[in-house]
Image 1 (cartoon, rainbow, N blue to C red):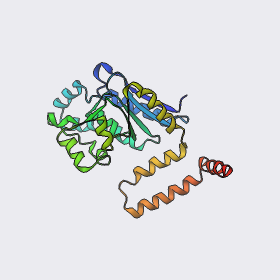
Image 2: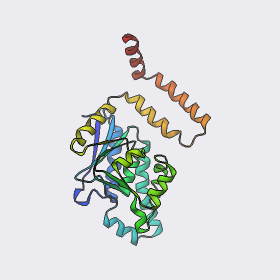
Image 3: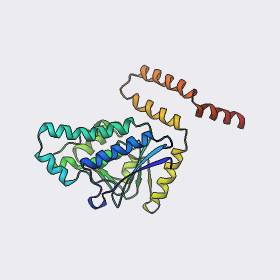
Image 4: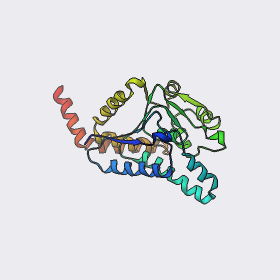
Length: 244
């Protein structure tokens, strides 16, 4: 089995719009990836022209007609997906071609790496229907400047691929004609890194979010010591010393 575990949003006729079942399916696939010893990277992409264009119309109708408690329970399903992505032991890459809007943009933002086609478009247009992209704020706030975050959320500003790259919202932009091969190369290279080092790096990076400076340094020292004890580190040191 490949070291790159693929999750494809496969509703191209709906522009891969999110509904409850699709969110649950993504979560199930993430659980599956975490249990596979050979998996090194999770790659999320969309079938067809768009990554994910937001919520399914049927979901919007249900939101409109639900009670506050029903809507809260429903919102937690997406919240738990974002948490699972953040806490997942493997790096999660979003490969975005076409539109990533609203919840679809949240899915990209919650990923550890975002690779974009030059035709990609990102944004949170929820404000236009009086809705607040509330759950993604905690993640977006850590991705871009405060002023850009406000503009994206409160004005519904959309970013093209080049603008998203300049803002630090995405990691790389590739020509659409070569997008799939470029993504495959990127994912394979990341999958080829030390599995233990990448897992420990992800855990520490996000674990530091709420820590004061001295506690973050202490956590770094502890992970540093753990990393030194892994087979990957010892073998890497041996290779380096033998090369010298």
